[in-house]
Image: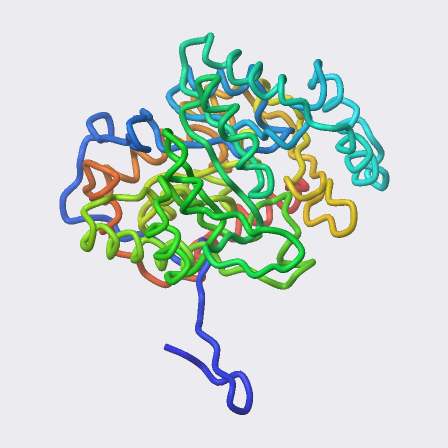
Length: 386
């Protein structure tokens, strides 16, 4: 349904996580017996969680820790880990910078050239732990870095930019050909980011192995403020899920979609899955873990941009181990820990034994879902400075 926003202009209503709620099912399932796995090509993950390719979130030790817990940490090939031998020392400099100087420092530290030998080394370090490896790069570097990562043993290659389309017009450089690249690579290529049905269809027809959904919802991303673009994650996920289902009916190929950003609690993750997502990519929640390299800080992938940074360094603090954030036990009551437990419990409550079944959960528009009857919670949190 469209609304008139002025003479001869219509706008469609879009929804975010705080505006909807999930309806309990007529049948419930034991949370311990639900299947939360995510399939990406031949790779099967125990849990549908990917850690964002941000230098304050994922480095080699974190990727290994994430892999041991059943998820997948995505390493940023355009960042600190492929520019410096000891990346944690550099990340610590960024974490320790004054707020007003942090973006400038990030830009300076990211000027050092990327070393192709470090790309292979980082992949090999993760694979040495006998765990799956995923790496990410921008479209401009994909053709160069993709074969290096693949030869080193990478399992999943991610091509990521603020907005990705199959059709890109440019006269001063050769556009990145997504379809040609996907055919050349022997491993699944996840591409993002997208928020519309039509773009999702075209990307899937080009042969991608997965789709990242979301433009600007991440806590460290400022694209929505800087560029004014984006679609709230509920609507974006539903639209891209519809494209996935249509593509599957037409081709028999299931392309997983992964909601990327905008989720700070287990409830948000559950809503993303119910809206049609096969998995989620999360940054801030994992940046709060003791294993993350950012020491309680993280910043967007576009923060180093020399002319138009579309990310900022944010402080999220360290609240627990990665295992506590994924599996509990929760030591906080804000929904930021035991994310897998929250997903399992929600699946059981709505009567879903699998992720696919959860994607059929009834959804209601509920803008008061977080405030209804919660006056004492809200006043106490305000009093405590939360």
